[in-house]
Amino acid sequence: MPRLSIGIDQSYTGCAVVHYNAADGTATETIYDFSPSKAGVGPQRLAHVHNTLHEHFHMIRLLGTVTQVCYEGYAYGSKFRREELGELGGMMKLALVQVYPPHLLHAVAPTTVKKFVTGSGRADKDKMILAVYKRWQHESSSHDAADAYTLARIAEALAAPELPELGFQQEVLDTIRNPKPARSKKKA
Image 1 (cartoon, helix red, strand yellow):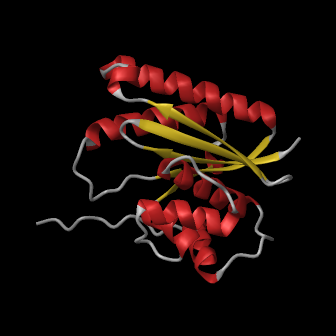
Image 2 (image 1 turned 135 degrees about the horizontal axis):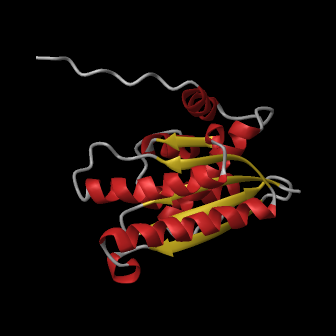
């Protein structure tokens, strides 16, 4: 069975999922429209997101051995729709743990995703699409798909430590493998 790694970029209105086949270097990307006009609102929307992703993750599992899964974590400075995005992220995580063991799952900060492909955590969306193409000759259909593809390549690098990586890529992998503990807030 082929060895597969998965990358997921979720936003308020959609989700890009890429599974990368290390054996032949191919990638399959799927873009879901989870906007309220397509997926509904409230609990109906959450159930739709969960069911769709659960089915998709299960389908990938049938295609080969999933070695690692990386999904983009939250942009903690963002103010817009954060509660709704948190609920959607919760549905994605629930679908993931129902299909894959927790030790395969890794949240990766948006700046870390950018750094892995560009060397800088500050690249804009258009630069990400170009950087993915330049580094891996992969044409992404959108910036979400470019991020998901990068996450799949991070997952593959985590699963195959023998792969030679650039210095900044190795820093990213070390950060994911050995996360710093969350800082506690000072009491007033």
